[in-house]
Image (cartoon, rainbow, N blue to C red; front, side, top):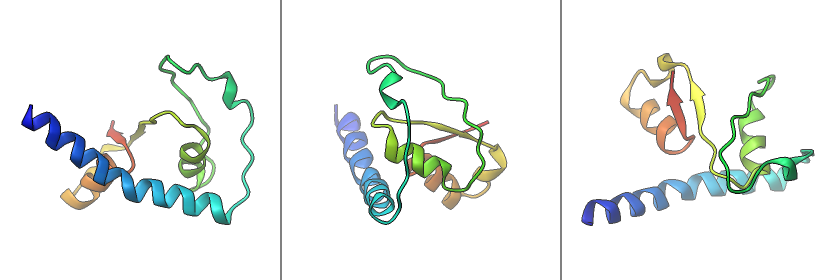
Length: 95
C-alpha cells in the first residue's frame, strides 16, 4: 500500500515538468494535427510515425490526450541522469 502511494506521488511530481513544457510549447507554436478523433478512447494503439523533426514527440504529446510511451535506442539510456529523464519525463522505453 505504501509503495503504491509513493509511486503515485512520484508519478505526479514527474508529470509536472512535462505538463508545463507541453503547455509552453502550445502557447508559442501553431501546430495542426488531423484525425485525432479516429484514435480509440479506451483501447491501446501503436502509432508508427515518421520522425522527421526534433519536435515531433512534443507535438504528439500536445495533440493526443492519452498517455504515450516512446521507444528509444538503448544507447540513449547510458548514464543514470539521461536514463531517469527519458524514463520519467519522456516516457521512453529502451529498445
